[in-house]
View (cartoon, rainbow, N blue to C red):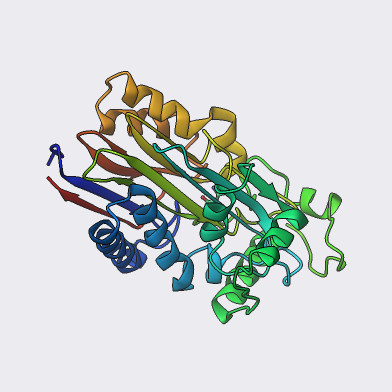
Length: 303
Ligand code: ASP
C-alpha cells in the first residue's frame, strides 16, 4: 500500500534480535503515534510518543528496560530525535532519568545538538527532567544472561574476544564473574499528513559493554536520519552500524529513487549474518522494516 498526499505512515521497532512476541508493544506504540498525529499533526512528536511507550514498557532495552552494565548496577542510556523542520537532539550515557528520548528532544531546544555523560545528566537536573532509578527483575535477568554468555566459549559480541571485557574493565566495582550480546533498542519513523518526516530512537546500549560505551543510536547518520525524502532508524550492534553510516546511507539510496524495500535489503546486506542489524524507514510513498535476526515491529499506513 502506498501513501498518498495527506496520508501518514508510522513504523516502530523493538530492536534487532528482540523476541518477535513483543510485537504487541510496538503496536501499542504505533497507536500512540496515531493519537499524537491527531492532536499535533507533528511527525517528530508522533515518533517521540511511540518511543516513550516502548521506554515505559520495561521489556525493551530502552528507558525502564535498559540493559544493566556489566557491573550489574549501572544503566547508561542513549537517545536521539530528528525531523525535517530542523529539530535535532541527542543524549548519550545518561543515568537515572526517565524517558531519555524526551531529554534528547529537550536538547534540540538548546544551542547544541548532543549532550553526553555528566553534562547531559546535569542538564536533565537543570530542566527538572523526571528521574528513574529502579532496576527491574527483567533487567537483572538480562544481565545474568549476558554474564553467562561471557563465561561461555562463544563470542558474546561478534568479532570480539570475550576476555576483552575484563582486559579493559573500567567500572568502579571489580568484575566478579568468569569470562568465556544482546540488542534491542527501540525506534520510530513517521511521515505526517503535512509531508514532514520525524525519527526518534532510544537504547540502553548493546550488551556486553564497557562503561561509557556509545553505539550508533545517538549518532546522526548512523542510528538515525531524517531529510526531505524520508526518515530511517537502525538497530543492532552499534560498533558495526557506525562504520557504514547506515541510516544516512539507506536514506541516500531512497533519496536517489531506489524503492524503499530494496534500500532496506541493500542496507542489511552490508553486514555479516552473525551481526544483528535491523532497519525501519518511511519515504514519501512507502514504509517498511527489515532485519536479519528477527525484530518486533509495527507498521501503520493511512493512505
Ligand atoms: N544499536 C544499539 C547500540 O549499539 C543497540 C541496539 O540496536 O539494540 O547501542
